Amino acid sequence: MFNKIDFYVLKSTIVPLVATLGISALLLLLEKMLSLFDFVINQGGPIDVVWQMLGNLMPQYLTLVIPLAMFLGVLLAIRKFALSSELDALLSCGISLHRLLLMPIFLAILLLLVNILVVGFVQPYTKYAYEELIFDVRSGALGAAIKSNEFTNLGKGLTLRIEESQNSGRELLDIFAQKEEPDGHIYSVSAKKGSFYASPDQKYIILRLFDGTLIDFDTSQNRPRILNFDMHDLPLEVPMFEQFRNRGDDAAEMTFNELWQQRHSGNTAIIATLHSRIARALSILIVPFLAVPLGLVAKRSGRALGISVGVFILLLYHKVLEFGLDFAADGSFSPWLTIWVPTAIFIAVTARLYYIGAYTVGGVPLRTLEMVSDIIVEFFTKLIKRVRTSS
View 1 (cartoon, one colour):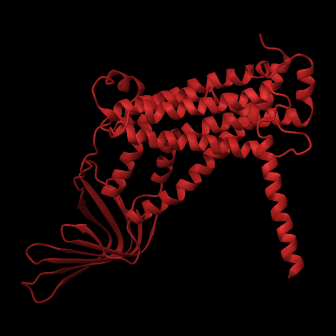
View 2 (cartoon, rainbow, N blue to C red; view 1 turned 30 degrees about the horizontal axis):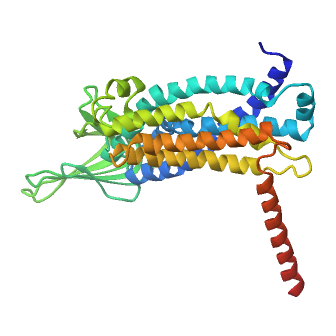
View 3 (cartoon, rainbow, N blue to C red; view 1 turned 45 degrees about the horizontal axis):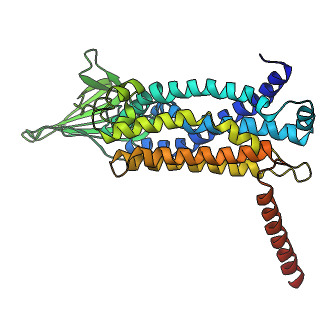
């Protein structure tokens, strides 16, 4: 079924595909990482939770990254063939563009299965886990990091201040703590260092202090009692935190099976989400037919205009589906209008571009756009030269 040419096309496609997949995912995660660090630090949460959040975000980014990687992989392979005259040699041997699409379509089917697995079954759980981490950080259930040079209220009359903290606030240096009892009793503690530990029954957090002084002041007595210690444990009750909601309250957190089982429930959010996921999954099969004509370039120009146009089309389609999902989820419009009409337009545009590339003389769909681009570039080049000459 497959010959050497097919495997050559596969090799030329899969290298940029994998590279684009890795680079795009990395860039998206780096952009999100900065905001997550800022959020966690401001909330006083442990820094290591950021890595868990980024891991849970990865499946959500793959819905955009997989089609984009597929598009660039096929386009760069066809572009390479066109510029090196390999495409001319293949066409002269009777191998059509349809035949060259065999391996990209095979790859698209594999990525379709991966996309269904990720979007339909993995992403609902990771999205729920991400939202739960956000909730836990805001509520303090993960443990708040003690901030330096600030008075921190730990509840029940206990106030803590430290000069320096390490290990996300778990190891403290130069500590001052004061606890006020309802009867007016005041305990003040200063220590050079301390650490947090959990009690065996998980009901208390123990603040273990080292090398410090304890002052016990009772309003009924004239003089406070002072005690120097090498080690002292200060127990803190673990607060009761509000529990996060159950998974499935949001349609985006439901798997394909759960959405399909409730498709007749009348819930517009569930119906819209089901339509959106099906459209996104199936549209990856159209991507190779978009990439091939946009990868056809004239040898003289060698412009990369097809890359810009193709990426713009995919990003626009992605955003339109997002807006379509929002409009259909609140019941404003039918998903057939907001999701499937844009999908049909995307297929129609792709079919037109592919037809030009495969069946017309010259076979460069963006030739007119390239000519317009050349005119614009030439105009601004002359304008800049005139400005420089006049100045």
